[in-house]
Length: 188
Image (cartoon, rainbow, N blue to C red; front, top):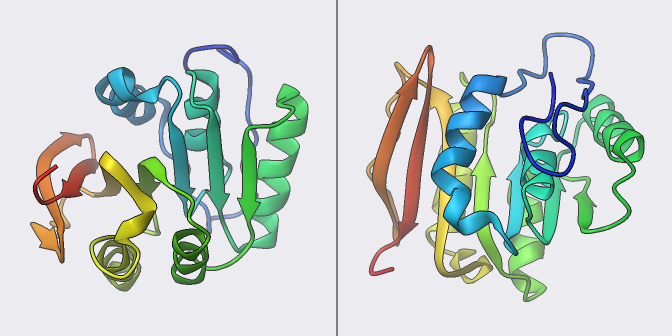
């Protein structure tokens, strides 16, 4: 696994050992960031279920001003810290070592605003998708900047809902066994 483009291009990243973490493939990350390219420079990026941190690090590499990594698994937190240290990323990042619902509530109540939120829970955990997307479309919608985008990576065979509260899907891209569903607040 490597950084695809930007300041840290071609640098190698590590992932936690075992099968608990499924890193987003290089190809799917490239597709994601090709779509997000016009939005990434200067953006605040939130990487939910961050795993190795590859997606959030890619955002930093391509010009995001800050990435917030949300992850609770200790092995994944160690991988994120190691990847940030190995790349020499001095700042522009924050770790939220807690579960996603608690982190979203904390971030929203802190007044923080995100331009892009990416979520990639384990594909089989439909409850995690629903909980995170419902919070972002409801109680935690204040976390989203005007015109913010929320992107959910999921199994191609698992279709997410068209809407979660104020959050409505406007695009889906499928690649291999994976899909990316893009959401924004209704009216943005």
